[in-house]
Image (cartoon, rainbow, N blue to C red):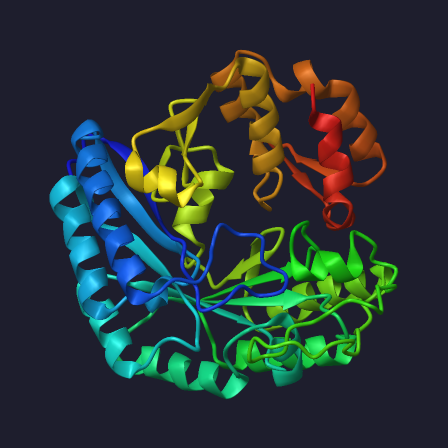
Length: 403
């Protein structure tokens, strides 16, 4: 039961297992059999109970189960996991409880059990409505499977659904991205996350493309087919160039705005009132607790994370690496994370927290980018935010906020 006198806390639970790794994925995830998943979940429940005893001064306002592929859990496993959270923590009765789902791993009955267990927000990892693009990414589902699972989720009562999409894929054109965007929006989800593909190290795509978005690739690369075998020297698709990637981003903003979605963060769009409350905790630097393999936390400017080696976690999940964030780090993070959101950073909040205004600390940088049209200060609201032009080059500008 929640207590209004307690401090708010976001809770993240990590489920690191998947059917197989996608070719772009560098998340802490890997395949496992049912027995391995069951043993891990028992250990995770032990951690939940122990951490809950420590955080009795907090209310869980949001919960997010990520991975990996959490929808590999059986209905019974998820029910027991959420029941453990309820008896271990003080839980808000109006909290947002999100679970990531791979459309290739769920059905109507499983989704019904998830809903009855307490999940009230689903996040479907669709990525594309083009089956050839999905196959090249290494996804295990088709566009049809997504549609069937989405419709099943609506039938069993889910009223808050996010769809994850990914642009600038190998072989993707502006036209194919527009097709995915329109088809995904036609399902009328409450929320859409639209990210551009990043080629990460230690992934199959890195072996093919490296960090070069010029479209060149190692034609001797080996690509696993959709069944997990090897095709040998398969055809290597070209990455869209930077101009095409930028065009896709602008298309996303325009099309989703026309369909009633507001961009509230660089890559996230929602109908009014359906912004992801859990992710806003991260961007607004509020307290969150991460449990499970490799999960990260930040409570009271103390950042800590669990071990990312499974053997070590199973032996002793209580060991954490931690760092106390000094004033400099807090200021930098406030700007980095806050400027990602269209609401920007409140100067009043900043001054109250740090005893100096943003102009006191960043005056020259702020004036420079305002004059160049990349930042905007809204006097009536007292906040600093990116302009539309600034959003396009946000990563470059944010680097100047390092003190």
